Length: 373
Image 1 (tube, rainbow, N blue to C red):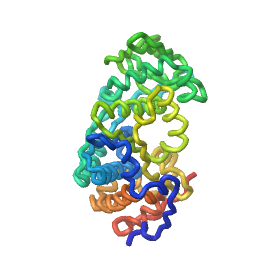
Image 2: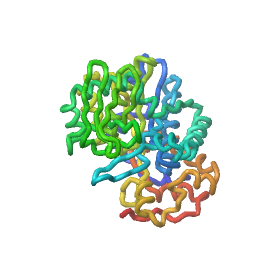
Image 3: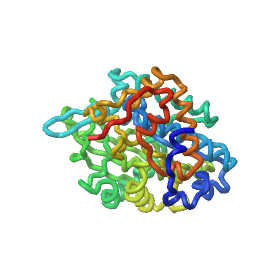
Image 4: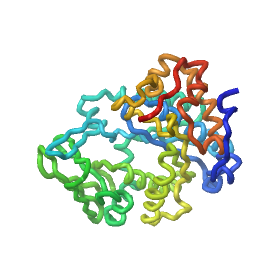
């Protein structure tokens, strides 16, 4: 018996239409030769508990779908080293440098940003039998379908401003200063111009003045796309990969990227790009790990504001969790998420940290999670 056996799992929405979660992919997988299951995470530190659970669920879901549909599966992990790592204010304006920038400058150790993810990915690969690929943001942003999508967006800035930037109307595709790699976060001085075979990005560095970045569709140059732009590009890419790999393309993310985000950003974005609905990737959302109030467990709140002051660090840091309790913890989590991956009524819901405290009670001597601020 586990805590899960004592819960009530009322089937919601889509769970009424599916007997097993592989049914979510069945139509899109018909006639295809493989499954490509893509997920992503920012390299902003050691994976916390919510990220750990999501990645394990991705592999469990891929293994379940591969078995049910009789197709080989691969997990593609987009490792986003374009995550902001340094924040600087100049004359009231906000500028950033990325994790990748600071690694290149020798100010961050690459291993500390990647080893925790690699350890988790290797464990999940070995347990599930599903291989994985790591795709850094530098490689992702250079892929031709991603560049084609950027070019389309640049040609339709007004349309995409309503989707990607409903508050300020600035589509944030940021170049970085070639001298110091600072990027203006708000994009107030950003100018995006669609050229015949490239996108031109103009901005201003507070230290080095105006600069221009050319981003050819065929390759070359570099840019940072903020989350809504990157989300639409990912959908466009996975639609293209259906044909490139003869694959059923699946995007698996936490449930906070479903609902309004999917309905207000991704779906309108793909429709505006003219991608036929039958080519859209299948979107699957993993359960959120939440606090007692129902709010998403947030590592940034824990670190910056001490919101979860009574929450043991092991829930925010995979290294601490494994150092204190060993990989048996992952075995227990794997058994749990494998049930989520198969059963619709277990996948389409959230789980509290209290729930995980009870699930892991034989291994973790921890107090339940406190209220969020």
